[in-house]
Structure formats: C-alpha cells, structure tokens
Image 1 (cartoon, rainbow, N blue to C red):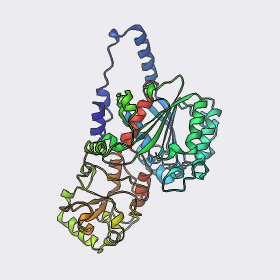
Image 2: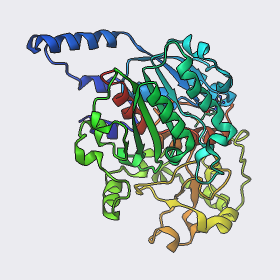
Image 3: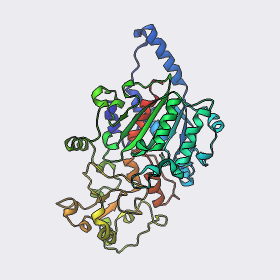
Image 4: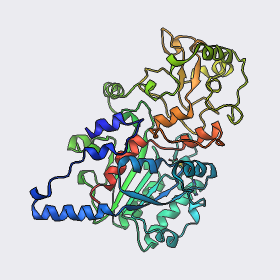
Length: 422
Ligand SMILES: C[S@@+](CC[C@H](N)C(=O)[O-])C[C@H]1O[C@@H](n2cnc3c(N)ncnc32)[C@H](O)[C@@H]1O
C-alpha cells in the first residue's frame, strides 16, 4: 500500500496521507520489553531530528524529508549559489548559509548539534562526459573537507546521506569516504536507483550512500556494505533475492519496468489536447522560424507556450541527436542543467503533433517538437505542486537549477529507510 502511495503521489503530495496508514500496535497487547522499546522510540520521535542540508540547491533534499514524513528540522542549509538560495528562500522562508562549504570548520559543524547530514556535492568530478578528475578536481575539495572534519567534531552525526551521479561509486573520493566512515564506526548501505523504479517515466539513475553510526543500525542488516540496484528493500521486501537484484537485466524485465510507469502525459502542464487553435498557429509559425525566441526567458512570459517550441533550424541541424517522446511514452531522458541551451544529451523533447508512425520514421518538423517546461521537469523530479520559482529567475536558470536537482520520488523512501529505527 505504501508503495502504491508513492507511485500515486509522485505529483500531488499530501504529507498527511502517510500517517493515516501507520497504525501503531495497541500498548496493552505489547510484551514489557517491546513496550519499553516502543516507548523509547516514541520519546525519540517526540524530538525532531536535527538535520544539516549541505549543497542545498533548490531544496530537493528538504522536500524529500518532508515527503518521507520524517520528524526532522533542517537546522541549516548551505549553498554557494545565490540564485539557488533565492529559490530555496522563496519556498521555505529561510535563506541558506551562502558560503563555501570548503571553509567550514569542525567547530562550525559542531555548533549545529545535528544528528544527520544530508549532502549532494557537485557531480562534475565524476560524470562520464567530464574529465573524471575525481578527488583531483577542485569541485571535489569541499566534500573532501567535510569528510576530513568528521573525526574532529565533538558531536559527529549519527546518520549521513550522500547523493551523486553514477560513476561516483568507482571513484577515489568514494574510497576515501568509505574508509573515513568505517574508521568512525559507521555502517553503510549503497543504492543506485532511478525514478523509473518508482513509477515515474523518467530515467535519472543516481548513486546514494546511507550511513549510520553504531550502535544505530539499519532495519535490514542484509544490505550492510552492499551496493543495491533495487528499491525492494525500501518497501520491506528485502529478502535475499531482492538484495541480489542485478542492474544488467534482460530487455524483457526492463520493458516490464517501463510498463509499470505512468505515461508522460500525467506530468505535463500543457497537454496536446488542450492546445487551442491559436496556439497551434503560433506553433507552426514558430516552427517555421517566424517568431523570435528569447532564450534567456527574462523578457517573455514564462507561461507562454511559444518559447518552448524548437526552431526548425535546430531540428534540421540536431534532429538525429534528439530524443523524442510522446504523451503516452513511459520514459524520458535525464534533464541536465544545459537543457534548453544545448540539444544533444541534455534531455528529451516532446512531440505536440503525434504522427502515425512515431519516432524518426516521420519527419520531425511535422511533429512540432517542444521543450518540457520547467514546471514539467519539476513534476518529473516529483516536486510538490506548491514549489515555485521567484519571478526574477530566468528560464535558463530554472532549467540549470532543476538539472542540478534530485528526484524526490527516489530520495524520500531512501530517507524514510535511513531514519527508521534510529
Ligand atoms: C548537485 S547540486 C545539489 C542540488 C540539490 N540537492 C537540489 O535539490 O537542488 C550541488 C549544489 O552545491 C552547490 N555547491 C557546489 N560547491 C559548493 C561549495 N564549495 N560550497 C557551497 N555550495 C556548493 C552548488 O551551488 C549546487 O547548488
């Protein structure tokens, strides 16, 4: 039931819903030892976990914590990017600490008395398309600094959560992270998961490290020191079979996975069927190169559909490299921070006119291709409906900030699993 709720709730959140299904056993029926344990847990639950959110961006981690229903308080968030902080402040009413994480000291971190640190450090040092300089890349230094500081804190965290791109798990930064954590008495469980595994038609596999400091234990000990490619353990079905779930599955299983996803249409703010005749005219005019495009998005109305149509010149030049999807598609590609600025490998384009023969078998210019809007990308990242960008954030900046972000549909169950029974 809980899994179903996640699948259903990808887009429309109702934070209270989850509690309705968590029925506590009647105290009278508990044995004394169980009752004592339960009372201890309840006491812990009364106190909110104190959480630090490092590399907070537009707050995907904080939304995930909320969606997980964890009783937690973000005691501070940190990000160096002022635009990301504007968005964070707009939505949460708190401006993150806008400094370089590299200059934080152990005393700074101690001052927050946080039980958990949630981190999504920069991924450029580990991306396949990049130079893969790993710990030698200056953008990795702030995270390495945090790792080095943990042994010098007087109150090290009880829990850690680290998110990064696939490729991080084979890096020297990863080896240093695991070595540090093991020395400090942490147990780790690692995952590589994609929103596709949570019913969202979006391919964005990411690496996650969950760490707990002894005597805190994970609910499922079978996963200790393992890299898991399946979300099954998060929903309680952590038997040996699911632990051994492999990522290089046969095509048949992958097709089955896609079939379990919702259609892209459910995530669209502009549905093809809703396009008014006027829009279609502007679509064709635009596709014919008749309208000027404001790529910055600052001068034109961000809600106007026109600016999202792909000009013919780009279709002619980059058509062969485009990933085209349809409203009934069950998968689209990862949106990167360069979506809308570049075509190749930055994310999918949507056909607003669906041809008889889908794909590149039909001329692309007749399919009136458009970019997904920032709201639609946010929907595919499972951000709640009330998430908003402040007016002054340009279209390009919106895509860039979302491209740096994370999937709440994936991170929320991971956080729920991390905080459970701690
Ligand atoms: C991968 S993104 C994390 C995005 C975030 N999880 C979200 O939901 O939007 C990395 C973030 O780290 C910030 N950042 C990178 N290096 C930093 C540093 N040395 N100090 C503080 N923030 C930094 C970037 O501005 C960016 O917002």
